[in-house]
Image (cartoon, rainbow over all chains, first blue to last red; front, side, top):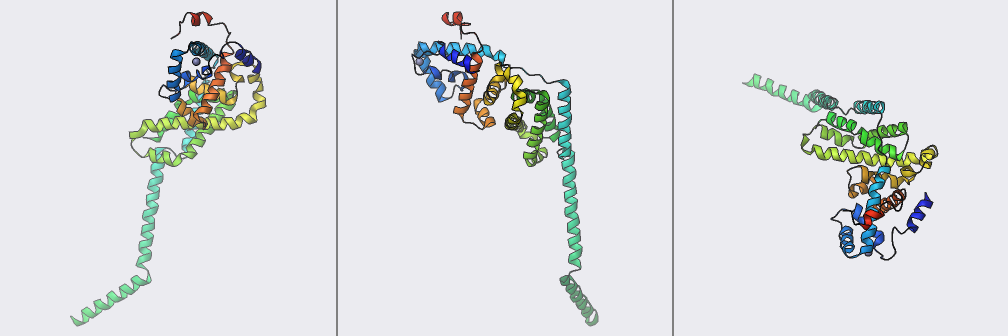
Length: 145
Length: 165
Ligand SMILES: [Zn+2]
């Protein structure tokens, strides 16, 4: 690949008359808002060397686009990709129904925990003391009133 | 936004993803395996985000989908870069045929993204984790190599007559 490039550079594609010539490519790829673009487009208005170099570069780049392959995906490959993506969403529990199910399950676990804690609290020492105290008050009230 | 929509969106991205993957790793089975690995990697990386999005309304749907696309393309770039090193020998034949496939890995990637996708230079910077200067340098050398495929005097007439917009 090196030889054609050297030959290409040796050819008078970029003349050495202007030091900015090598930057003309920026006009093709940089956004017009970019500082580099503004600078080069201003320069190119007054420099015929760069103007010609840019035109050549632009044309050649445009024409060489046909060498960039347009790759088409085989129908079988496409179907198998779609199937596998579907599987991935399933395996990773990413379908909405799965997420909802999981959240509902989580809330049930939470409610369950609350229930167990509630019963545990009912049977705790503090609560037993409270029951005993309440019973004592109840008996006292029954006896004296 | 439903996660089913995201699933469908990713499934429909397949032609675009495939052509990028194939350009980087020119083997149909390797390229399609690469795509699946990328989607899996994306889902693992963004699982929490996707779940949250799955249960919220689709106000920012477009943004999320755009973000999904650029992130998957970024992962394709990163994964294929690693895999390219492993497969280099078996890909030598395709690259030996010259033309586009004989460009360097990053030249191919960046030229393809610039010419065959809608991504802006800033987005290409994100995908390749490169600075603007680096991206432009690769683009420049790729263009020079590509234009070297063209005969030198092909456009002399048009240039002399100033017939280019
Ligand atoms: Zn100049």
